[in-house]
Amino acid sequence: MKYTASFMQTLYGISLALFYFSFSSVAAKELPDFTELVEQYSPAVVNISTTNKSSSSSDSSNKLRELPDIPEDSPFHDFFRRFFEEENRSFNFDDGERRQATSLGSGFIISSDGYIATNNHVIDGADEIIVRLSDRREFEAEVIGADKRSDMALLKVKADHLPVVKLGSSAKLKVGEWVLAIGSPFGFDHSVTAGIVSAKGRSLPEGNSNYVPFIQTDVAINPGNSGGPLFNLKGEVVGINAQIFSRTGGFMGLSFSIPIDIANNIIEQLKNKGSVSRGWLGVLIQDVTSELAESFNMDKPRGALIAKVYDGPAKEAGFEVGDVIVNFDGQPIKRSSELPPVVGATSVGTAVEALIIRQGKEMTLKVSVGELPSEDELEMTSNTGKRGEKAHALALTIENISKEERKKLDVAEGGVLVRRVEKGPAKEAGIRPGDVVLMLNSEKIEDAAHFKTLAAELKPGSAVPVLINRQGSPTFLVIRVPEE
Image 1 (cartoon, rainbow, N blue to C red):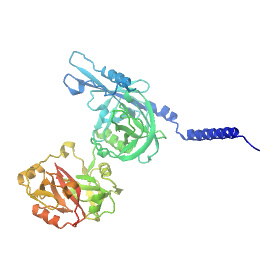
Image 2 (image 1 turned 120 degrees about the vertical axis):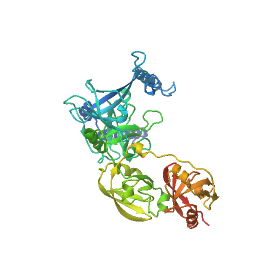
Image 3 (image 1 turned 90 degrees about the horizontal axis):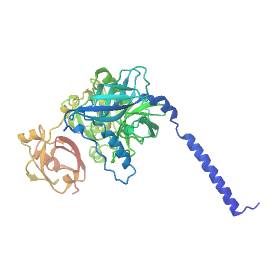
Image 4 (image 1 turned 90 degrees about the vertical axis):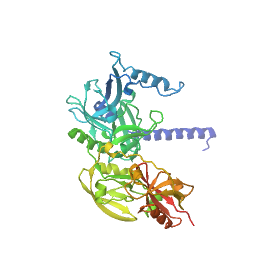
């Protein structure tokens, strides 16, 4: 049988349409349905508003929030203008002196007798905290406890038989898994957004978040979502929405949540004693780069490199500068950012084993974990340098450190002061004038003469670790010794 070209084209078009229809139907069936989850657990998500009062007109907390610099032709200009104008209307003037500033956030009910979890930054500094439920009931909340380092807070309202969420496990969460957030972005109560888990165990450099291995998602999170729950498809809370990465102040595809496994421990401590205790080793650490791994004779970059040992558990256990911690209490440490959460979650006083690499050899140390001191107790003093002496083959000028300078530089003994850095290996490694060189090729520096002796013995073409102290912060760098 013969067919015309137009008939064949029509038949091909019908076949193609049927294919796309069937493909779309299959794809639609595979997409998750969040309706039952939202209906069941949305009532346990609350809106949190806080009020700060002050009689000082010059207090910075009373300043009106300014409209972001958004072009007038932007489709978002009118929206943000209305939002910030509405928020600024919350500044009331009672007698010409007192003012009020209202901020919004989210939270979720974890027990029917009124305990509510949220972020610390949502309620920080508040004089009054109002919790509003989905049925429009409002309660004044009491702060049971707050923890700045994890950005967690626990509230309590006087009510019974409240709807509650179901807590899950963030450890079982997988990258690529669907997740859903419910919160109050820009004050729009019970807004629902969905996405997937983009990564786990993220360490954020800003603030005090190095004790939280964040869950990264692409769920749309905006101001007002803070403190709200992150659900998995089973309707279990697996995280607490806390931060976003943004250059505009709005969502840009990177959202970060506190894992619920971390949050549960913090909530329990806040509930029982109003504060949080964390494990502490007493070391300053950094990542092991490929160059550092080569200089330490390691097969690949891994672990947490110790740049300084404080007076504390690590020093008592025999840890030394230059040690690389690759396993702590049975948990492998691939990056330095993985160590603080593991140590922090360890109960104070617990004796654990740590596997380290020292000068290319593995060894095990036993350490009794201490309690993390307050931020004030951990502050480092800043240091400076002064004049120069004599140039060296590595293209830097060094000199011994006087007693007066040691106090300023926070260097108890040994080391040499860098006065000048010329073009060459030291400059390429990142060494600067004012740095104190404490170790060269895993050897502690006694004085300038010792440094020159060690430097002269370096193998041409080798990669050598060097420990410096820069303004109170010890850091390992790598010098590549030039070929002869």
